[in-house]
Length: 264
Image (tube, rainbow, N blue to C red; front, side, top):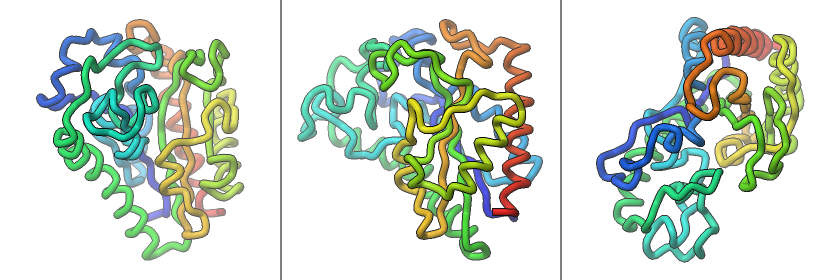
């Protein structure tokens, strides 16, 4: 097995029965910040090539796997020492990136701890185990963390009102992986016809921060796909022809990365 695996932390749509505050929201609101369909762009090819693939079924508004459990505030969890508004799109989302309110009152600390155990820890334990397993036979292991992004920055982003590239690749400004892996990923997406930008407006998240440790042989990179490539961003439903075209391109880019890992 090659020292390469893929994670998709934000495509899940399942909501536990204990998370009652999300039940009243319509689909376009619930899907506003979910990386809907991203798992479908990677999973089949990962299976074909025997690339380990890790995803979650849980909705990111319930628990955001690209945050830390301490990324909470007094709006999201009772008893939090963090002031109101410091983590509105944190571990538990209080409002969407467009400012729509999701939570009217904070959950109990007990529920926060329960959701951490049920939703957060299993995913991250799988990632830890995957690195451990692959590092037994390889000096370096490479992780691609797959995401999606709105086509235009909102007021909650670093680039409000700015049109995004088709693909944004992030490596914490060169900290989370080797330059050779970053170059392989960038060139693989460019080679299939995508317009690519590096580290703008995203530099990476908690996943690249946590697992991108080149000094330990762990190389992690984040890849954001522009949602306008494959969906109607208002309804959050796929546009068939665009969806299939994007899937074909992502599949080919993934194959190029998989084949290129040998030379790193």
